[in-house]
Image (tube, rainbow over all chains, first blue to last red; front, side, top):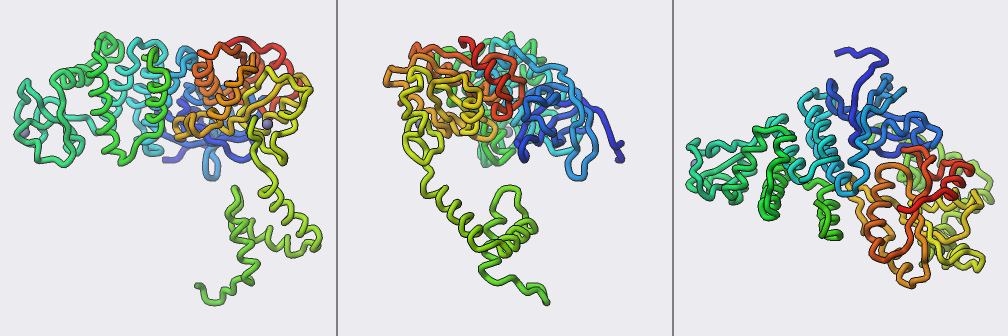
Length: 258
Length: 203
Ligand SMILES: [Zn+2]
Ligand SMILES: [Zn+2]
């Protein structure tokens, strides 16, 4: 595909790293180009007109010019800075986790519009959600679905039989549920409660607004978090860095976070 | 090894290797620097070598403010002129220079040596936060000024500290708006930074 010398795109800023004296390399998620990396020049100088528009976790409209290696951002305009989100350390940290998740799973220059829409939707909801944990679980489940890792929740991945309303198993390596008879057919499995399975099925078929109506006990929240995190760790073959900080916040300020 | 390739004399290739380890220096620039040094007058080269050794031998982190210094405690921490009741928290040593240039601030400093950056795996334990808590235990400090950079990580770090310190009851302020979002403190001009210090507000 040939692209013009200068082009315009919407983007969400996933990551920024310093380059040289005053520049930054941005990792952007765009609707048409998927993940791209670009250089923003001079943005660490307070006089920069561009700096504020390419802040981390900003939804912006950008003009880019083709560069030799990386493209160069020539103009930017903020579409949404998600300010409700930015006022709260826990919500910021959740949003950074989503950004890291997208960055980890997305290959460069692979278009995936549903992922862009999902990220935008989730960042909006994180600013107002009563249950941020549900936004994260919804996001994880749907992101995996859009990337071709939709977990099979309706039947056993091995024998294909319908699941009985009993204690079943979830297998990260099998990509879905296992019935008690088939539990030994996969290397990575864990028990899953009936309630956790119901919540996952509900999340898979609802939208973010509806998902906020759920009320989960702390135990159930933790089970879902651990289950999806294990599945993600299995797929990425590593742990995401921002999860450590989320746990740290929970430890340091136990009382009033969620 | 390629036929016809004669590597430079061992001391030269060693120097090239060392330069090559520096940030932003590729093999070509490393070779250029090495040959530049070869042509330099002996006294200049010696002075450069001594400066490198001195920076490693004599520079330490101040046990109080964590700024880089050649005498511990650092001059500002030792000074009787400075207001011992105020601590201004900054990300990097260069930020102290920027704030000192304004001539508006008479208190002490504390350098975090970074910011919380969850995606890069940099958490509170990687910063000089424990050292800060130690300094605050004395009970002498009445105001903490959060002067991290006005970007997401800087603000997240300030929020973390605010939460951590709020049980202590110490007054906490942050630099006034007017510093453009996304910029680095060290590049702010004196006037803007001075105004931001003057108009700092409670957090
Ligand atoms: Zn089965
Ligand atoms: Zn000091």
